[in-house]
Amino acid sequence: MELAIREAKMRLSELIVAARNGEPVIITKHGVPAVELVRCDRRGGIDFDRLEAVRRRLGIAGDGEGWPDEFNDPAFSRRVLGLDHG
Image (cartoon, rainbow, N blue to C red; front, side, top):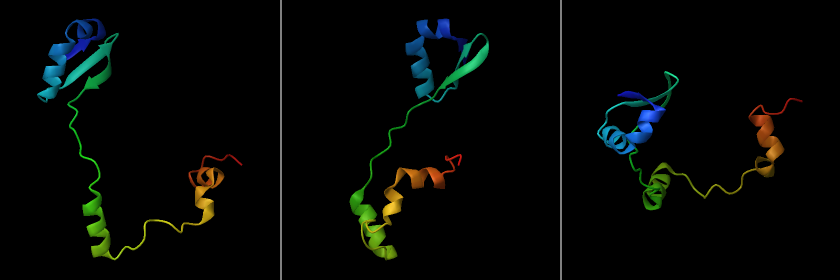
C-alpha cells in the first residue's frame, strides 16, 4: 500500500493495522517514498543469568574491568573511529 502523507493522516489507524499484519505501507511526499511503516516486534531485554552461564562456559572471566584508561578517553575514541581530522 502506498499513499500520500495527506491521505495517510486521515487513515492512520487503518495503516497501523495493515503494517501490524505485515503489509508494506509506504507513505510518499510529493510522489516520492518518504517512510515505510513496519510492525514493531517487541524484543526482550538482556537475560543476565543466561549471559553469565555462557561467559562461564566459554571461560570468560571478569566483568570487563581492567581496560586501559585510554579507552575511557573521548579523544582516543575519536581517533579510533577516524573522527579526528588531524
